[in-house]
Image (cartoon, rainbow, N blue to C red; front, side):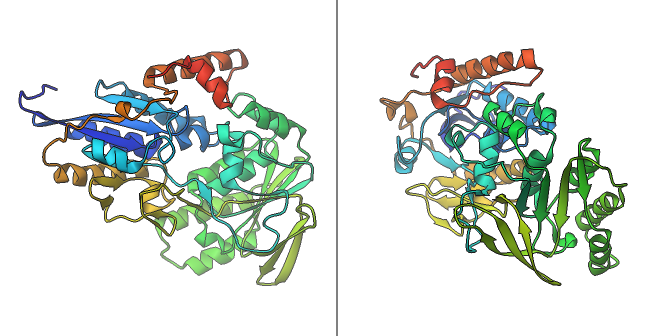
Length: 431
C-alpha cells in the first residue's frame, strides 16, 4: 500500500496481547490508507503474547491454536511493535499512555473467576477454572497452584465450554496429553492422579447449557473415557425446548441425545453430566469432601475431593479505568477521552475467539472516526527505564526455542513456565 505524502500518522497503544488485542491491531492495519497510517504498540504483562490462545485453550485442541499464525502475520508489519513483560498500572499508568498516544485500547480480557458464594468454597481442593486452566497451560503466575488429584472423584460446576475442557482434562487418559503442549508439571500430576470419575453439573436443564455442539460431538470420540448423559434428561429438555427451538439449542440437544444413546463402554474413566443440580454447599473440614446439591427430586450429596467452578469470569481492574459488573464501563467500545476497550473486557466473557474479530473491527471503526490530528507526543519507550522488555524479536526467540524443545517429544512446543526461564530464552535484553 502506498502512503500519501501528507498522510497522517497516528500512534495507538493496545494493552493486552490476546485475541482481542491482535484483532484490534488487524482492524487498524486494514483501516490504514493514503490519508492515514497507524503505528501500533502492543503492551503485554507476561513475557509471552497470545493471551488465552496460549494459556486458555485446552491443549488437546491444537487446531484452535492455529489462529496464532494470524497473530504473527499481524505482528510482522513494520508499523507493529510488541512490548511484553510490561505491566500497566505497575510499570506505567494508563494516564501516561493516554498522554503519549492518539488512542489507547484496553484488551486485557477477563481473568478472574466468578464465585458461587456458598459455604465451603474456601476449602483446599476448591478451585476456580480461572486458576486451574492456566495451571495446566503453563501460565507463569500459576505454576505452584495446589491441585489435589488424590481422590477418585472430581466435580466441575458449570455448563460452558470451559467447564467441558476442565472435565475432559481431568477425565482423559493422561498419555493422550503426551503429544500436546500441556505444562510438564501438570502432565506429571495428571499421570499420578487418582481421579477416575468426573461430574459436570449444571444448574439448569440441557436446553440452557452454553456448551457448543462441536465440543459436544467430540466427546463420544474419547477412547478411554465413558461419557454419560441420562436419556430422560435430554428427552425432557427437547420437550421443554418446544417445536421451534433456536438453531444452537437444537444442535446442542441433538448432540446430547447422541451421547445419551451412545453404547456404554467399560472404561476406567467416566465423565457424567448432571443437569438441574444447584450447588448449595461444599462439604469438608480441612479440604473438600463433597458437594450438596438441590435438585427437582430433593437434596443430593456427591462425595469428591476436588471441585472446580467454571461459572464465568470478570475483568481484573486497572487504575484509571472505570469498571462495573466485571467489565470496563463503555459505550460501544468508547470508554472516555482517547480510551477504548475491546473483547471480554468490553462485553464480558462471551463468544469464541473469532467473536473478538467483528467486535474489534466495529470499535476500531468508531476510534478512527474520532481521530482528528496526531499528537506526536512520543511513545512508551520514553516511559520505560528499568524494565526488561520482550520485543517481537525476543518473543520469536522464545517461540522458536519452545517449538524446538517439543520436537523430540512429538509436541507442538514444550512450554517454559517460569518468568525467569522465559526471559533467559528471550536473551534478557532490554529494548
